[in-house]
Length: 161
Image (cartoon, rainbow, N blue to C red; front, side, top):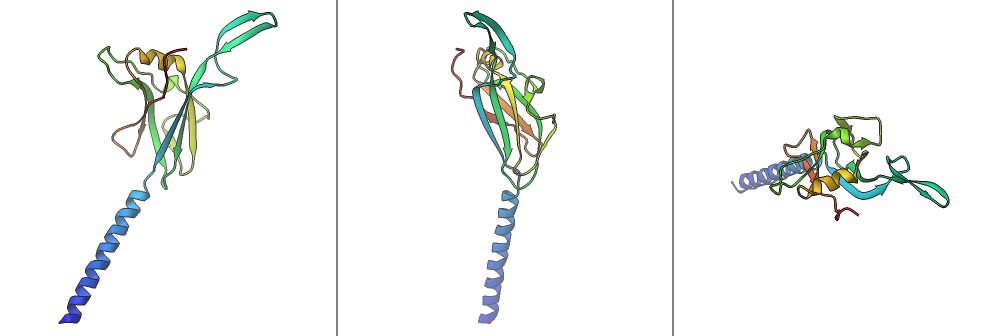
């Protein structure tokens, strides 16, 4: 009788370990996105805001941007379905900018397939974020196919310079 009890306990322990291993694999095999924001980034191909005449000739004043990088650090691919800039509502109404305001650094458009280890980047003009600051704290919302709620990243910006 004691041998049968030992076999039952051994089977219960092995079944629990197998169940735990399946849960671990399910959680770690999911896509995992990492979002980086770099405000006040300059690009040589930026939009010209103004031209200034100086003693050495004309110089161009270029727009600054918030650089956005989305990296898939998970083991499965992810699909980005939307990206938008909006704000935390402070009672002044709402304002948001959708994907057409974001300039992709690659030819891909939304919906965007990001495989494991791949990176996708884009940029949004800082003037758009400054405009959002008038309504509340700016945020970047990234909607993905495998989650109900979007990823929210808040750029660390001060007031307009």
